[in-house]
Image 1 (cartoon, rainbow, N blue to C red):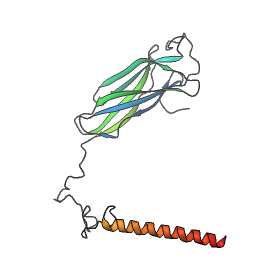
Image 2 (cartoon, rainbow, N blue to C red):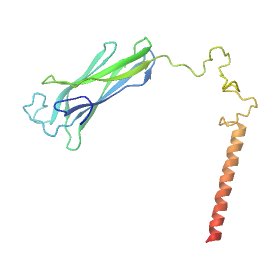
Image 3 (cartoon, rainbow, N blue to C red):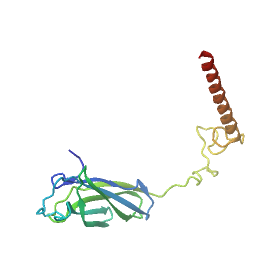
Image 4 (cartoon, rainbow, N blue to C red):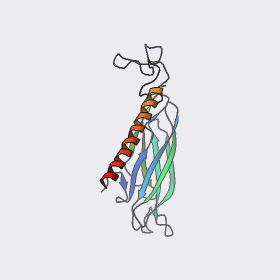
Length: 196
C-alpha cells in the first residue's frame, strides 16, 4: 500500500512533485510531476479508458502555485505496463513571486472521463536573494570573517596558505605524503618477498 495520493482504486498514483529548493525572486523554475498507472487490465467501457487500442487511462495533470498560477498537462493517455507501472513525468514552468519567503506548488491528477482525482501533493520552495560569497561581511570591510578571534578566513599571514589546498606549503606536504606512501608500499613488497 502506498501513502502517495491515488485514485481509480490505487491504480493512478501521484508519485512525486519535484521543485528546486530555492529560487530568486521573479526567477523562472520547473516543476516535474511523476504519475504512474499501475492497472493490469482496463475495461474498454471504463469512462476513463483510452479505448480498445490503447491500454491506459485518460488523465489531466494539474499544477498550481501559491500565486494562483494554474497549469495543466493533458488530457493524455497514461499507458499501462506489462511489468511494474506505466510512468510518465510532466514538466511545468512557473515564475517565482517577487516577494521573498516560502512558496508552495501543489499538483494532482484528474481523470478525464469520471472526474475522479487524487489528493494534491505539495512542495515548498524558498524564494530569496542569493547572498554573494564575494560581498563584504557587515562591519568588516575586507570580506573576511575571523574564526574564533583568530586569523580571518581568506587570508594567511605567512602567504603560503597552509592546508588551504593550493599554497606552496600544501603542495610540499602533499608531495612528502606521496613519497612516504610510495616508500611504505615499496618496503612492504620487499618484506613480502623476504617472507616468501
